[in-house]
View 1 (cartoon, rainbow over the protein chains, first blue to last red):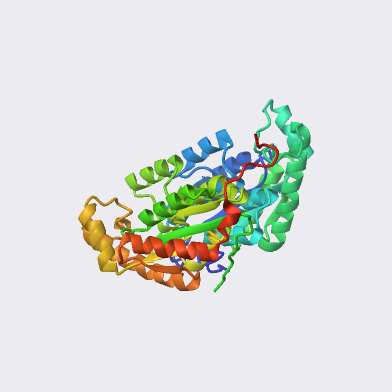
View 2: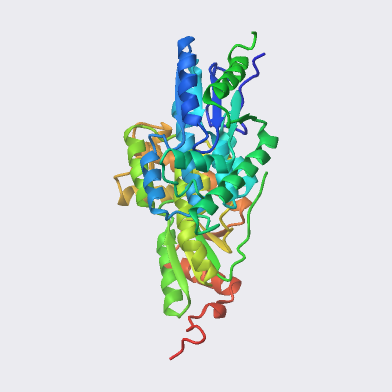
Length: 232
Length: 233
């Protein structure tokens, strides 16, 4: 059964949803959860089966991606300003990438969506009702999957791959601790707790991300299949 | 109507001036500022102009025709939030009289004319305090248009509302656009209890009225410049 496509709220002025035939599939999860790897696998799988795929993510808008990157570098913006900056970036991609692609019948794979943006802000003290109103412009996806990985596991993966911890992904701007390790664990735990809270509102599927990549891919594929070919 | 507004709870006072281009509000707020400064009050002036970040993004947006009503609204709110949290809020907390030449109502009027749902924009800006006084410099649309079109013939793209496709002629487009902004302001004036000032009068008469209202509604004595305790020499 195809349910009619809707916005969370009033949506975008002048945009009708009736002809958005494609599918919007969202993969959420922290850095190091295997999101990028999985999106690569899924794209290959979908394209092999003849589906056209469009990719969107965070900080990828033509309009403000550069300015956003620059602003984050200096860490001079208040949480609310940064939050609105991300909302602008999201809205630009929504109007110029997601909606046209859905209209053309593509499967849009979103490497994170409004939920990561909301969760990050809530952890920094933002008001949920305000965020819900800001993001009432967003389209309700056909499927949202959240890759869950324990913070300790994420940390191991970071170190194992010889990557440095990222300032923002460690929540260093919040000031939990001067220790990057402690701050990272605390911040990622808070994010996870908040994701669980949003799960009860938005009802996304939680996927165990602590398995071998192929097992995760099969899990994701089953769920995507149910959305793109609901008849069997 | 979802009306989520927060009153100013800081020791400072927030005075906003709003009105059409050509309503004389900038002149009046300048004179108000000079009066307060020269009388020895703690006053801080801030005006609605875009930061470099927004300017560079809107430049690109315009060139590639990227800006939509939603992103136009969001990017300006981003800019406003930056100015609000960096300038306005700290100065209010420090107990200043903050004079804002255009405040969030400028955005509310403009964005709703561009087609954004009123409730969405109101909610977007709901983090910003309601001013203690919002002076609305009101005058007939015709008069405002005459003042602008005589003095400043080169209209900027968004300023003339060219993105709305009202008319290929910038001056014609500006006239229609300002007419709609005027209507939006009138609605906001009722909903947000603006203090309406008849702006179709001599500068001095208007300034006198504005000062009288300020004296009447604000206990100015609280805002005298003083040296903090322990720092007197």
